[in-house]
Length: 178
Ligand code: BEZ
Image 1 (cartoon, protein in one colour):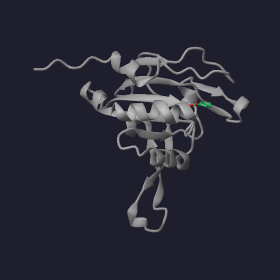
Image 2: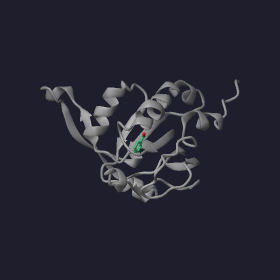
Image 3: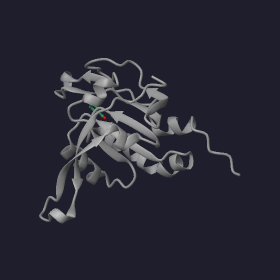
């Protein structure tokens, strides 16, 4: 996976636009892979679903909390992608009080499929979702890859460790002081 260029896709996002007024001031916006990744060194992580327990209790809040440590190591953004639509991802971000991690809705699974990470979770009634992984991505190219072991459909366990933020941090050097 190291050296892979991220697939070019267009994500259907919902952008807040207060000029719209009313109780739900969001509009559709098409955001491409290049919009998110070009010219930046980022951490990308993916998980099976918004609001699910491990993702909501550990993975997403830990990335949010550790944002300053990632910034210190030269990471410009932290992105979380999930096969969920923009309404769900925005609601999850609000519920989590996110200030740093940005959520990317891959509702159709197009990005995840082309990353080779789409798995079936029909055992839980989830349909197609993402296997859990994380990557350091530099200008749209995978620099480091952290994939949970045992990628498979309808996996009875939900491994979480390799893609945990502390594991990634441990592999990122702090730049030497000048
Ligand atoms: C989780 O706890 O994050 C989880 C639960 C069920 C399915 C996938 C993930």
